[in-house]
Length: 530
Ligand SMILES: Nc1nc2c(c(=O)[nH]1)N[C@H]1C(S)=C(S)[C@@H](COP(=O)(O)O)O[C@H]1N2
Ligand SMILES: [Mo]
Image (cartoon, rainbow, N blue to C red; front, side, top):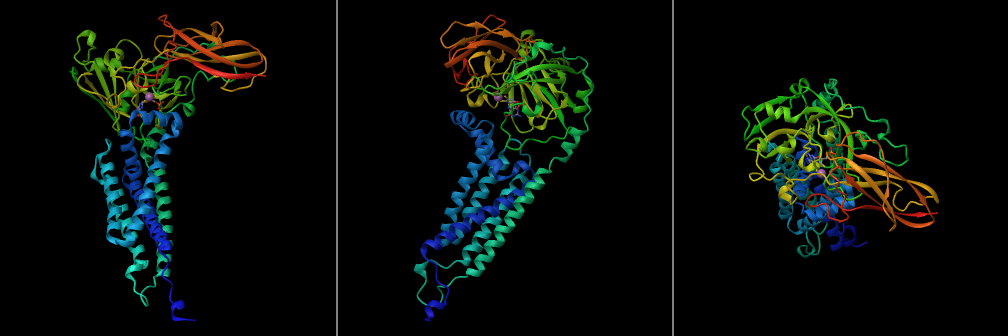
């Protein structure tokens, strides 16, 4: 055996590159795990992935956002975070390879990523403390240090290694360090997740302790035949667990109701108010059935739901604060609601005070608001899309003008004012269903909140419009079910629906995109009758 063969071999360039890349990846994992752990202690939203994700959401061009919602639906947030991790992994691999030649530069690269995460975390609208930088900073320091150590165990670049002694490398040391790093990263990551899962205990407890008083003004009983007995039609009241969720929050805010405050202030407010949750519960409570719709809902889409809400009348509260609507000479035409996570939602003061049941909501279908839907308090204005009316996790109401202030979505090209467009949806049969020839029940929902639905018609292929049977109306703020007994003949057919609201206006055939003020057009479903 020659001397040559006894020494540990200098690994080939390819292997060496691979080990460098692996070191980069391990460093990134360690950095993220530490960041996750620190974030659990500091603030769940301060973690680098959530912070960078939030910053990305705020900067996403409307076309990309639209595309993401269309393709991923409510999974868009998960996809975004996976995307961020994928990009991070690519950079980590590159930094690992870079570190083989320039150890300091590689480590500095990791620190640079930490700086980006820290900048994102501290510049989020809900960030109130520089401690939000800690997860990224500490994570990056650990990651940079680890990369430095790991690469130090690898051999020097081949060209720097003369033949003979010195071309060996600390294989054992590398394997031990790498394994230890991987194991402790996994441990820290899991611990961070567990801690994060148990964060917000006060908020959870405050929600459990809420005993919603019976409303002073009950919602009128829902007519028994508001709910059709047709399989496949959406239930008249959407259970909380099935209610659609649309918001920009990567981590759902957990607000402690006992510490919650709502401030009402701004132009024309002669008596500023700051209310506690208890203050709200002591006021007159109303209960109303209201259908909420998202402006991002495509024709036939799922972002619409109907619930029984409990809350206080917003107009009464505003009047106590001295607010007058523009029609009564008030100076403010826009009400801007702000949430704890920095969302701003602007509604017309005129609509809020015109007698409709605009509310500060505390209860949803008999329960305190779920965290996902804005606990402890959200706003709701019948007839307006969610992005101009339904601020969740609300903490501030400012009276101002549309000229003076553009809210979050308006800055992103959505319309300033957006009443809900008259729409109808076929719930059954489903697209591409294969019903048997004979009587097929076609059914669904139609909505034109605050105007009411007066007629729904169904068309088979290019045939004449046929009147559908309307279920009883609950209120003009809720959707209305409809059905049509179709005598189906064999073959492929297209079913189309359209609704007419109480102003006499029939839903337009003209297809528009969701941007800027909601999709229009008719919903159709293609089926094959067997
Ligand atoms: N704080 C906050 N409130 C928000 C939003 C948001 O992103 N953040 N999204 C709005 C939009 S676009 C809609 S459609 C409704 C959806 O309410 P839901 O998630 O309870 O269905 O909330 C509104 N309120
Ligand atoms: Mo929305």
